[in-house]
Length: 116
Figure 1 (cartoon, rainbow, N blue to C red):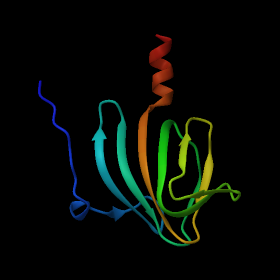
Figure 2: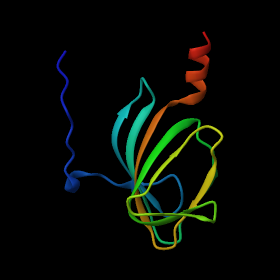
Figure 3: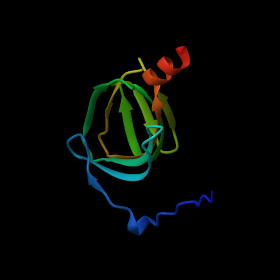
Figure 4: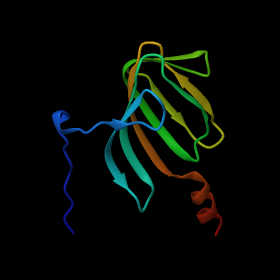
């Protein structure tokens, strides 16, 4: 079986309205069988992602701008974040930002599989 890498030139990336108000998402890669995906998230100035949990492992790098987690933790360009089940946070940005996100397998399903 031959596998091939994927390149998506920046000018061909497609941005769509995000799940939350004043956000946009650019989906880059998806593996439905293993429930993994990669996308860019653009938060416009003043936007908020309300408190949420992570049944899947979230791995993120802030590419542009600045964001605040839980009103006190500031992330700047180049900062790294990972969050999983039970590691809730709210995300806000005053200036706007762009994040690279990798969402890994479903943690709850993995626990069930590991227990069998």
